[in-house]
Image (cartoon, rainbow, N blue to C red; front, side, top):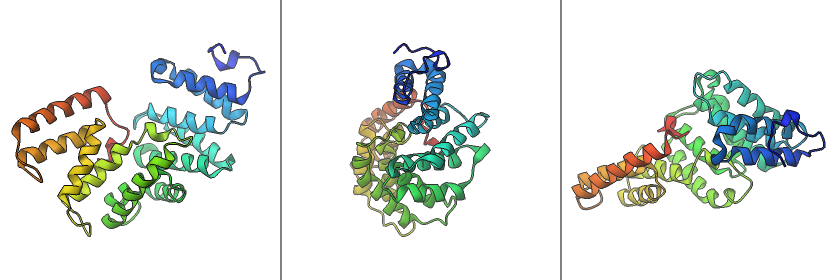
Length: 261
């Protein structure tokens, strides 16, 4: 297929063809083509491939900030998918992404609606929804603060990750297993509410997240080595980890989940 504007493409193309073109253009190596990818995805959705609407909503939302007027467009794309989709997996994906949008973007922020969507999505074992719902419980966003419930949800998210990541789930470009490990690791490292402190378990989780270049986890590990917390004090190791965290932040840029940290 020739990757030109979808509006000028042959009407004989199938919904799958449109979706495939969107996938190709949305790849990181074609990041400058994301607006074209958005168009292809939307056309795929119009032709019946509802995953196109979900993918378009994700792509658009991932490119926006709080001031972008297109946030509502991303929301509308996901709502269109949610209204028409029948399968649990795709529905859970749309619900998780809508929940994230309602938590992140000021223009459409509604933590109570976010919690409703995330609960529905997490009931089907969506790891990202479980993670976001845990963050809501940690911060009292749309629900009362409940650290023990957050711990349960985070553990479930880790268990679900291996299964959900093998499915047709692409929202893992937003949340990573290292985000879950980092959040649960912090909870154990410090102890909070009814969650008992377990420094050893916390360091294990932070180490796993750091191995995947999670800058926050790497920086927190540096603090532990500098203070000798749960490990022997090692200023050289701490300095090395801090330098690595700085490189990781520079290489990866701002995480879509940074607003939760």
